[in-house]
Amino acid sequence: MASSIRTFARYRSVLILAFGNLVAMFGFSMFTPIMSFYLFDYLGMSMFIVGIFFAMFAVVRALLQPLMGRISDKIGRKKMIVPALLSYSFVGYLYSTATNAVEFISYRTIQGMSSSTLWPASEALIADTVPTQERARASGAVSMTYQVGTMFGPSLGAVVAQLWGFKEVFYVCAVLALIGAIMSALFLKEPRRSSLGEKYAEKVTLHIQQDKNDSPMKSTAGEPVPVRHKSDDTSIKRNRIVVILAVTSFLLVFTFSMNDLILSILIIDYYHTTLIDFAVLYAVFVLIGGISAAVGGHLADKHGKRKILTVVTVSSVFAWLSLTLASTLILLAVIMSVYVFMATMNGPAISALVADLTPPERRGRVYGFLGLFSDLGLVVGPIVGGAAFDFLRLTMGFSEFSGMQGLFMINALASLIAVVVVARGVIEPETRY
Image (cartoon, rainbow, N blue to C red; front, side, top):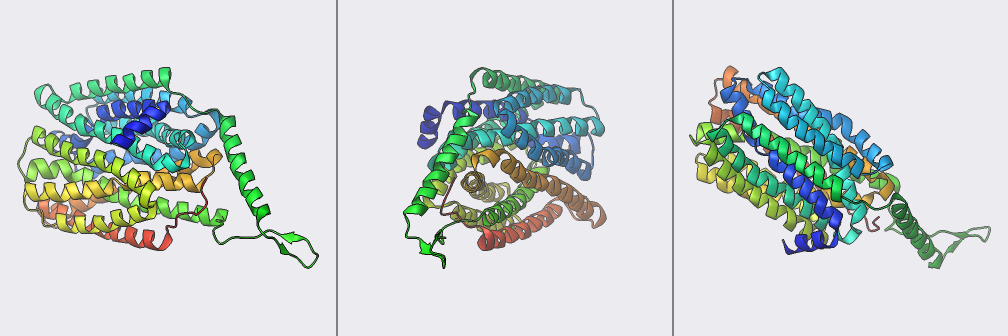
């Protein structure tokens, strides 16, 4: 927490970016965790349709994030961030007018467009602003504010929904996103594009000079041959690691998104709680996630990103297997708390490792590529989860809880694959951008 405060004090743009993310996510988290319960129980939609609703957000992000990241490389990060937050505000209002599945899914599509514009530019702005040795910490600090927003949002959203209704939740969401857009427009700054190029050129020149100082080998013609150190990373090798990180991100997001699809229904229907009870429990999970994001960034800088990813994937396997035995609310709360703490560490580690592997002028598009795989996880997770849940419950005659146990087993298998992917393919570069 202290390191996050120091990061905000040192880098004003990171602070403003974190504030914009805080208020925008605070608004949208007011309804996102309970949306499956609202659509499934209140509006009577099937879980497959609910899964389509959740997935549509990610479908659009997956298609647009690489393009939006590339555009942010050309025109700048701020010109992408402010319009995205304004669009978030408009979507909040549109949700308040929706009455059927088509309208909800259509407005979810617009929300995905807004997000595809916001996040690659935000991640790239952090990498542009903060030096290598502090990037994971800065990413963790911003992730912490994101988690704080998603922690308090569900609590307020559940209270508003229970006292006044869901439309009022959407109104508050629109107002908060508008505040984030205004603050970003007034106070957000980004480094000059030319200065980034100068820093990159200086680093390349430094490496060339170091190579010249090494004892050169002589060719048969008497000309010096550049020495190739074992620590030198080729572009192909770096790109391969980025792809492996993207696959890892897909697998972790796949499991997380499937869990989000069923969590509110599981807690409210199976354990017979209220919306407010769910909001309190969800707030505990997100508070743990906020702390973990900051801790994870610090640990990734200190002990290595690969080690953090290994711990996250291994712990996820055991968490999903344990959740199949969560017959009481207290047991579920304990297991989920441990899982959330471990799983949230992966974001800062992956983000910082990608920055280490990528030169400044390509970070926007690479983060867009990474976001593409994350969004594929958000697409596949809810659709597979919704279809599998309906199949087990309606076709096979399983109870709601037994159907959810089946989903937990699918998540355990996906996490096990992630363990293998990280162990065999993720390597930290010895030379970093």
